[in-house]
Image 1 (tube, helix red, strand yellow):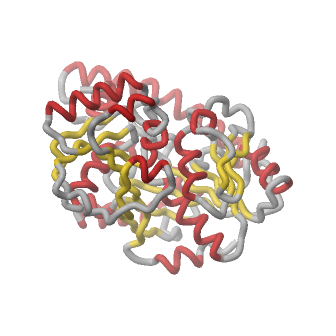
Image 2 (image 1 turned 180 degrees about the horizontal axis):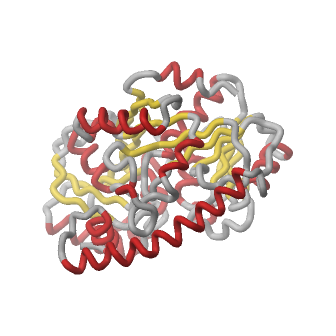
Length: 370
């Protein structure tokens, strides 16, 4: 069991051993300190201290839990909507795992890539690759990135990727994504649970979007909605799924070529490889569209793949008699840069996933009016 899996088994309560109980007690003590620090920080922002407001509208897309909830496809969806309205959006990314996110760097301009993935980090580079009518800037200081977007790129609206807790830049719309499989982070803040801040922070949200609702029982979604209605009676809640768009070979994806229908390689025995926050969701998606996933090989979120990892991937694929390896677009960013991947004598497939609303899509779009 990986360190990340062990941690989740402890904070979820799945691990009922004596050591698990001791660990939860210790993590709970640390949680209290973290929660106090976050509360003090939020109180400062609530009072308007250290907050910058810019001259164009700002939409924030974020979450309240650590891990993947689908921010990247949601940011892409929103930018496409804004572009169709004739606006010129810029995505402001923190640049997690970038070479140096203390600098504010323009990653792309109107869909033209300006830097390599090692400089931008995987998520920012992926957004820059798929957003042909938008710009992407990285940097810890979002307010400075915002000013660059306005002054140098002529942007008339901004979209903050992973912006819910980054409150130094004022926003006009706060969209919070909740993964339906674990929406409330085991009801504890880090490190006892997965909450980035107390659930009371959801009161700042303008819109709540439940993601991956097809991966849980309908009764679970109803329970989440009831709890949210009690907590946030006036906040709209929408339901979405992560819908596969198409399947690429790694070369097709890297070269910007057209992909194939998602079921093209269904006869292959697939090994799923991912370095994302919720690898089980990726495997479930492949299974749901009819693939025979013979093995899953999860790495940590934002894993920095190296050539040695490719060797390990090959060994596991060979051991489980896989015909092909399937990866996420985020992981394709890094794996496509490795020389060892060219020597892997096995097809590498890249699944492109987008957001699809179960209902209320038009209402959600209308709520984006800025």
